[in-house]
Image 1: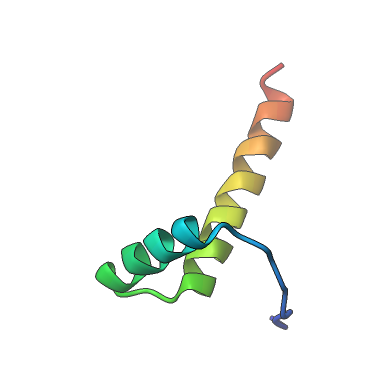
Image 2 (image 1 turned 45 degrees about the horizontal axis):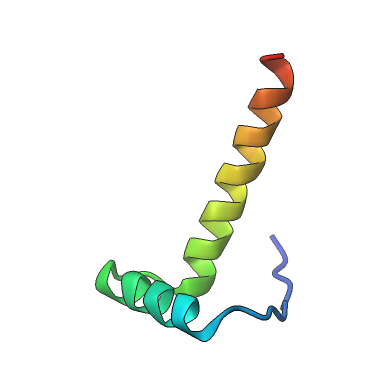
Length: 51
């Protein structure tokens, strides 16, 4: 699957804490963000059918 480069503006304290979390858990920031995006999409899709 192709990858896309993105640019985001994130509060520095939030990014530092997230980067630290990822480092402590042995993962790349981009990998964790992608995982969170997939979960968010999955959860919102499920919510559409639960109404």
